Amino acid sequence: MAITRQSGSRRARVRVLVLALLSFAAFLAGCGDSTGPTTPATPAPPAVSAPTPDAIARYRVSFDATWSAATHPNMAPGNPHFSGLVGATHRAGYRLWEMAGTASNGIEAMAERGAKSPLDAEIAGAMALGRVERFLSGGGIALSPGSVSLEFDIGIEHAFVTLVSMLAPSPDWFVGVSALSLMDNGDWVDEIVVELSVYDAGTDSGTTFNAADKDTIPREPIALVTTPPLATGGSAPPIGSFTFRRVQS
Ligand SMILES: [Ca+2]
Image (cartoon, rainbow, N blue to C red; front, side):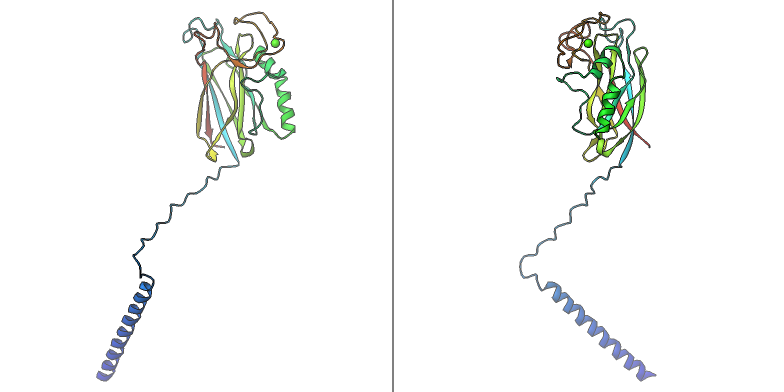
């Protein structure tokens, strides 16, 4: 037993030596390429995961109108209100209306009478061509100041929103956004607030809130309202805002 023990003890010493030699050899192998100055290892850049936006997002747009005689002295009629929201979600290149553009018949009817037709037909036509994905239609504000909201789904291939409402009474004035992207840096935005300026559709030449119809022929470019009664000093204060906030589907 003693011999076996010694023998075992010797084998253990041999094993320790072999392991030490192997460790040393491994150490040398590890140093084999370190003939020059040691180059510190370059830390791997942190993994940047590209956003993977949902194919469809849901938003609630809140139209918060501030327009009133109280907030806009001498710039509001007795019954300030807004027509029902109307618009679309669409591709990047589509325009239902734009600054300096010429109003379509649909934009004219919306801006002069708060009508959703024939704007709906124009949008349906663009939908048939794949340029528009969804038609948006919501309520108005019967008496400003006031609020109204609308929820809608929006797809990643049609991530732009256009939405308008007539400021009333007025000859052809309206508020809205044109081709507002709800994506930023490759992902859906959580919230966008747009201060609403007032546009002149260029389709009626009335200059006061309750002016009789005076058709503008030919139509003038869509432009910001810069004259009284809505504007003073060449510009009109915002009459409210659109807040687009992403909500759970
Ligand atoms: Ca007109």
